[in-house]
Image (cartoon, rainbow, N blue to C red; front, side):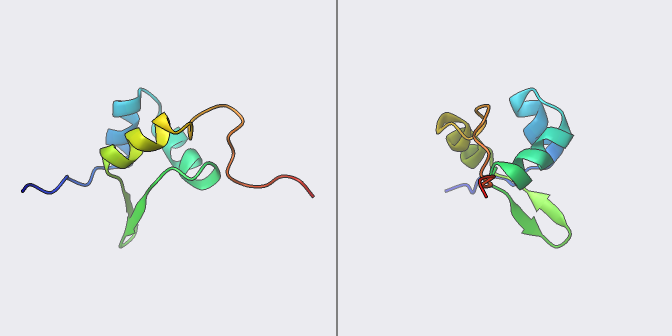
Length: 68
């Protein structure tokens, strides 16, 4: 069985057709699945695809609660 490779934010951006800054912004504000490895953030495309299908990238789906 082959383990899924870990990819960079740049590779996630290419996969989704967005810019790398959006990957980091979505990780922070929308809960994009990511794993910290040392100082780097790494991703698995299967988790990213599942997150997108579940609506994680939808407009207005901010993870943070802005109600006060």
